[in-house]
Image 1: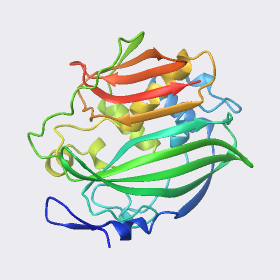
Image 2 (image 1 turned 180 degrees about the horizontal axis):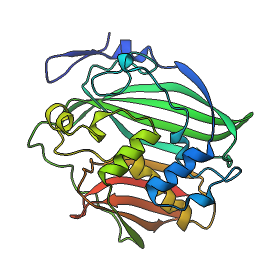
Image 3 (image 1 turned 90 degrees about the horizontal axis):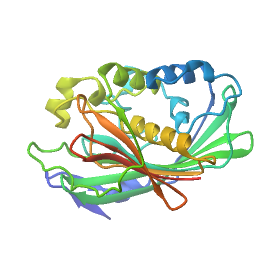
Length: 288
């Protein structure tokens, strides 16, 4: 039996959590033009360019296949209660850590597609703020019998960050060849949470952020930042985006502006969001 004793005295039965590996889920959805246009409005993009038959932009599949559970089936953080499709990891905070995607074929707005998901790993690590449990989910987006997108999504569970914890060590990045400003407002956070039906309270409940999860302000969504980086990669690339890897480095909080940056890296691009002092919030690699 593999049992982990955490710093707060609780125990995590990793063998039990790993019984969730191989668990599968299948969903179906239609890639609504209206939903895509609402996303375009959120990001400040022209809505008219999105119509039936338009290729779905990279990472916008996160707007679809949304699970709408009643409030009685949610945990105190606003996420679905532990122990459904995902394993019941007994660490308080759950965050979107990163992922790896491959784009095999375009998929068009207006198309009805399926998503096949399976839990592929449950791993323990120890970080600056204590114990971490990473759960990886493999998603496949199928257009008919064609796998259009494969995605390995990493979710991290952790204890609240103690007050006074030092920031992550600086990540050395190249000089950007392209840089754009971005600052999320509370309206942008609300809209993105609504579009992705994300009930996580760190994005809208300031008291919960400060008193429960240890953040000084509302947290800008990691997947929103990843989407900005993928959009920039697709715009700068001379060929279709084929591979995209991203990981969160440290949270970006409401009121702290970002720059969205890119620099050449071999045949692809290195991308990152940076705070005013140069600290990296999200970094990514794109290949074409």
